[in-house]
Image 1 (tube, rainbow, N blue to C red):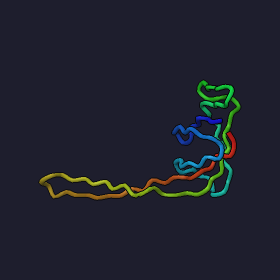
Image 2: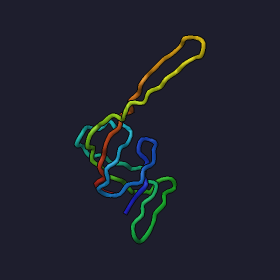
Image 3: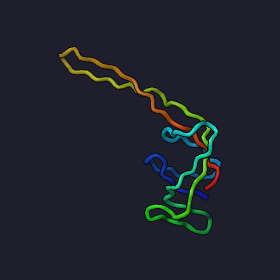
Length: 101
């Protein structure tokens, strides 16, 4: 069984007991989270596609931890002007484990 769910504006294909990284959620570590924006649910017998969402369907997950991605360096330069800027960015993610589809 699997489902396609929208979390923080992004779509993820999820299955039970799967761990994945999603954009940072405001929930605390160890808390349960429920996602109602389910776009598709599929099991062995049938597939249900929402218009745009499947009515009455929800996905439950547990927040495992909050992490930061590796640093991405952004370098800007203007030739012949002596202008150089180097900045870094670390995107924040939340690791969740899907409990029920």
